[in-house]
Image (cartoon, one colour):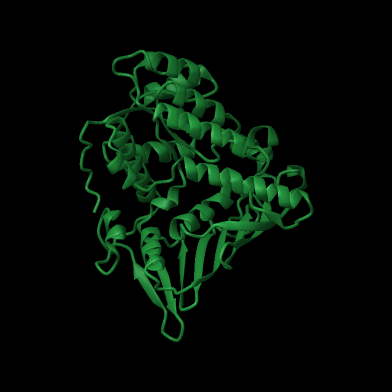
Length: 390
């Protein structure tokens, strides 16, 4: 169980770029990072409007001189301070991620970044090379990957409880953008503008989330080829899609399916993953995160509950409040930030053994998300044809 044990080398001084006043995701980052006391927010460049960002930072208790006009000033000044930041979280529009990540790594700062890391695999590979050169951690916030039942599913699949894996069915299909809400909502507007969002909307914004869950549960599955069809049901969003279907063939014969959607009218969140084997199936839904369905052919449905002693030790390690109490998004995000902190500490200490024992959505996960979106867009734009996964 996670009990907020302090890091061996003390709290990590931490900053944010973006995530300012009115940012829901900024609040989630801060809540998760600060929960266990492993990070201390000491600086930030919170807003494209420098004065508004400075006011917001001071409302969080930061010193005025450590509320910076932009990320360049933040990294330059903090890298020269004896008590400067060691890590930064990036919660800005997609089109800025690559430049900010690159600048942070080059300044010797660990990074936690919203997805996507960037727009192209070439840019992602450049960030990987820089992270290795400067020995910096890059984490990606696939938030629900920190939920303990994802660990339970991974262990059950690995020990063969499901048999041979045949089908992986994934979706993230909500309904909150079933109309052109971006006309009145600036927080949504940039997500459907290629200049800021990149080559896709829902493929990168929601589809990569269940895709990463599948990578955690099924690390041996490798995509061989895929076919993607995407649509802009709200026509003003074209060429970006608000709905997409992706079929994948894996090496070894299994198949996968991802439904990425923002126009599933009536759906609250709709992120689910179902793994079907030759003997049994598992299903997890983030709106009911404390239960996972386990269905063995010919037997009654079983519901596995979070926090119970019959779960695998790897799942119980991520437990925070014991069985029976509900956990969800904030606990999952806090677990990720806990792992990010341990990875940063191990990296700074040169402890390769400790680092190798940690699993978290790292830069390789970020690269794979970018690669998947690129291949989906390539397939869709070629008329929903099969393309080799490159």
